[in-house]
Image 1 (cartoon, one colour):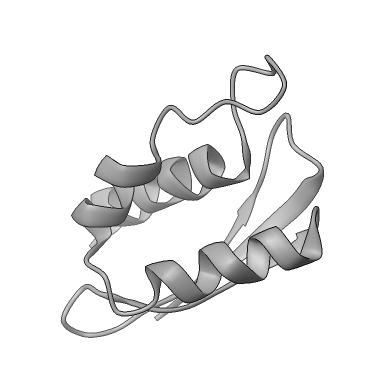
Image 2 (image 1 turned 90 degrees about the horizontal axis):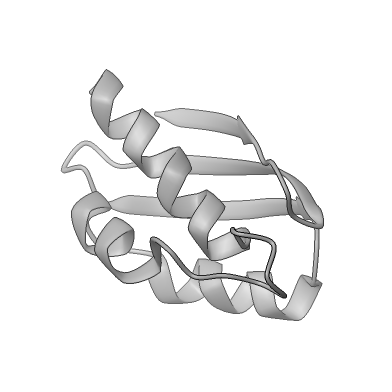
Length: 84
């Protein structure tokens, strides 16, 4: 299943997330933001469970914004998890 999430408070504007049938991350892509870093995050979370990614990324802050692209990914996954 594919989900789109509009980010808040970050340089990236949107995250597209594919969830596999076994509730693992299939693919993640960010629109905007720091291209290399976000490709790295996407590669690192691929194949991991939703819960593992949330636990790892939730609460990461970027420049005292109160959020970050990884934190926004965790927030998106929490919303997706509630829908599954």
